[in-house]
Image (cartoon, rainbow over all chains, first blue to last red; front, side, top):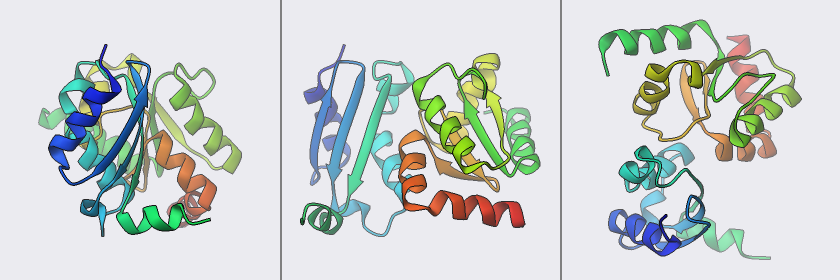
Length: 82
Length: 107
């Protein structure tokens, strides 16, 4: 079992300036990540960047699944403007 | 990854314009995420093929390395990695997936 906090820390080790929020039950997680690093990258590339921080945890099945939502700071602003 | 395995995956991708690496089969998906992708492609009504990674351990591990993507399912269109279940849902909702499939099938 791994806590959402620990997953957050892993992601932040790769993307130190990112805003990261993780929720989950210890095996399945949902993460929202806002980072300037995502600018100009396709969604696949953005997710690959996040996965690169989690390679070991996912290969060993400590994390069974994680749903990712990635945003650039700009996307995040427009997504939350109602 | 061995050159043989890479060649095997290359070959699968060159032979199938829309290919899904998944757990289980179209008729009996063995995982909710794989099922999402099958349901989306069925809704689009396009021809596609699937590879059951539960029946081939080599491919199950190899495809993760090949795509640089740690989870199953994985969708390939025209030999290009498109994403997993989350991205498929987003692309379906925005209409982009249909467009990508149509372009691939027409090529």
